[in-house]
Image (cartoon, rainbow, N blue to C red; front, top):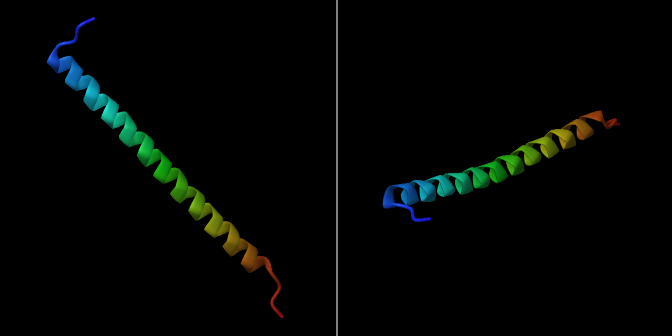
Length: 51
C-alpha cells in the first residue's frame, strides 16, 4: 500500500504526539508518586508522639 507525502507526514506527526504523551504521562506519574510519598511521610511524622 503506497502512501502519499501528506498522509505519511500526518502519521509521523501523530506518532510523535503519542510518544510525547507517553513521556508526559510518565513524568506526571512520577511527580504524583513523589507528592503522595511526601504527604504520607508528613502524616507519619505528625502522628508520632513528641516528649
